[in-house]
Image (cartoon, rainbow, N blue to C red; front, side, top):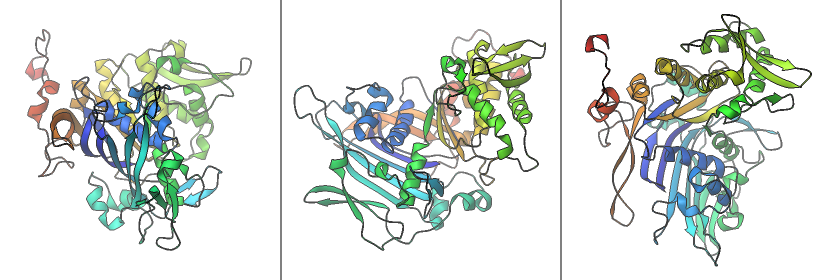
Length: 477
């Protein structure tokens, strides 16, 4: 769970610090740079697995193909000046994880702060592009006694906080940085605290973060941080992927574009007895009924039942929806909005899906009458912070962005952040406009020394648009 993100020098995020709870909605105009925050999250996830160059290529605006210029990632990256990106992420990690060889690992403590600074090395010859350089990397623990200062979103200290914040550490950081004659050195410290010598790693030699090189349970807390960051994903459901057939050999975990929807639902239903509810073990019919019941929240979708049928001849899974009139439809015959809603219904029933999920404009393709159902569904995907996470309350976190007035009005103001372009001072002392994320006034994110937004700042989300020719009388609203 990502509880705080600090960004300096990434795209138009010149200096942003933002806190997150289980569910967050970021509202702002088109083209203002809301998605750049998702790019940061995605970039950190890639840095936990891949070399610096490949992680940069994977970020949306770097075109995702070879040859992309890493200067795309920096604030004013094509001007001749010192380029630097500094990122910090405070996170709650799972205490028990597996290493790359399948061996168990147990983190010393589960509340961590990860910091990384990246620079830029200019091209060394014609026809080449510059590259990212690792300048600093730190991983340290946050004491449980300080948790109330860091976890300010409403939650149960007894049930939620005590369940997710486990272990303790009295020693120094797990990763630290020092400068030597040979260059920048990242020291890897064991979970035993100050006992034992740190293992030095050259920042320049590996071409990747040191955290991404920890693949075994020798350093369990670093591994747990890596696993947490690897779980951060950007959900971009595509109708063509949602409609694609699944063979029996296909993965039974839904991809971020929605592919393997049918195989995933079949796996959840088949394994439902492994994930019993508090009352009684579930059966496949109960899982299908839960998904069908949630899908029936959509106006115009007359769902009687839903099931995945394996075709033994063609060896494919097909998801069928039966309407109340008896008509049976395959998933590929459903509308785009219905398919996206169905995919989220399936995610809701999958206890194996944990971590942070970012979603762009979940209202796309949804009829206005169905927006309340969509917003409720997205909110329900997030962990309930009043209870301890378990199979019935998976440890999931949801961040969405939107420019829809309806979505803004349906969200709790405490969950809203307003994306706005405001003046910032650069490292050179110059004034520039950059993205700011403002909390709602008097919400848990706001404070005396921080700018917030009021209802007056979001009138465009609360009033009829200029020139509207068909509106409801006030007494009907």
